Length: 226
Image 1 (tube, rainbow, N blue to C red):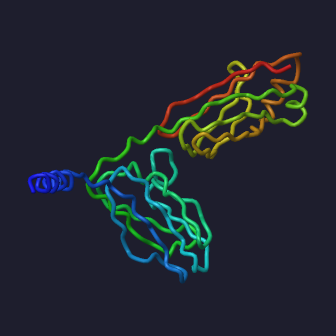
Image 2: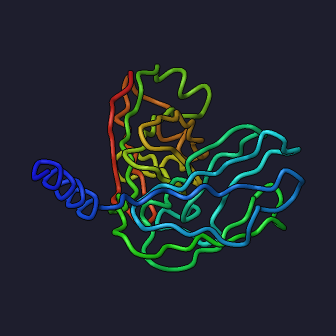
Image 3: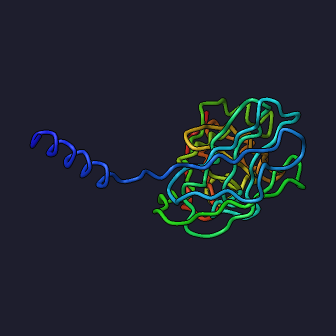
């Protein structure tokens, strides 16, 4: 009998001592276009919400914050997905207590609120990219009037601007570049008329490119092309 009582006591301690784990909320749209199944969805901070498009739905949707984040893009966002699919709402894990409105950017009349209450938000990484100037022939750059630049997202970054120069002379620029975390994008930077003239002669040209990142640190790269 003592053994049985002891077992029950220990089990009770384990039960009452257990800590509940915060769960990410599912933000679900209604099967009939175009609304979410409820006006607001609540979860604790630190979790990544999930957008669910029901299998019997009749259109593709997404979840897009109406507030701008530090990188210039939406504060949180999911991919646009067809019925029967789900996708993480990236950026939701960084939100602290509060109410955050969102829409479906495909159907802006679809609105809802993500409510964060309790918990601890994850630390949002600052927008950052790395740059490289890929191998390319100087002759090809002169002929096309374009310099290829590879932009890689150290973290998810939008509204990146590039400036290409030779010494103190500005050759060309590009802006509005968006790149996902861990993904790379090759951008062809158009050279200006003066930029084309500046690289017209010589067997080699030393190019430098600088990236300006909204809300983050700048990045740069250089390469001599022949």
